[in-house]
Length: 341
Image (cartoon, rainbow, N blue to C red; front, side):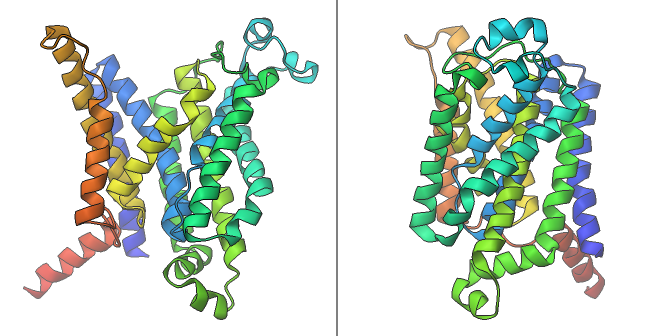
């Protein structure tokens, strides 16, 4: 119990440090970066809940983020703006305007419900078949968002979403996500799920119902994604379906793979490291383009760097930077070693 509480304290402490650093700096750009970092923490931790404990790569996570973003947007756009933002919206929703703080939770529940309905047959699959079907599910979700103009405004940008996500709301959601991810990891369900990851046949022989365990984790993962998507939507305030497809999937997977999918600590560290590197590279890109050192604009440096970092991590540290032990375990281990000396 001590190590779990220490892990929780350290990881939430990192979130608090991010918030305090952004607030004391009094720089608007840093506040935006910190807010986006906290939202990404919710999304990456949601992926860790399923992928880290089951060992199955999921591409569909960003699709559930989109479900959350569009659900909350549809329920919170002011009534007087819905005629312009969603001209084909169903009459039952046209006159409805709810509090964003309530719809963020509703968005998570809707994403979880969709996941519960569509994913159970997929939970029987493993290895390459599971990866391919999760990618197919992402394609299905993206196609629905792209063409369901009544709810999403089709491929066009949806606007008019009230901005309510600030640094404190995002940080609070990130702290709750850390606590929930740790609680699931150390729960009976999480431990059983990891046994199926390590040896599916042996776990099944001992009575573990593999599809059910994966299904529950997938639903919880979609809940995180829906809430993260709603927070993101109320932070950006305008978006289109292309925001929930391959590029965002690559970034979220990159954060988790680099940090370490097997631990909550790895997920948190991955988000922190990748965000810092990304923002640094974007600043360098901006300076280079502003100085006009090249005849054409320099673009894509951040994506190339993330791809190379993923390759390097997979070669030299396949389990990520924090592969197996949470930060609380590492601290207690260091303390014991010092006592022995």
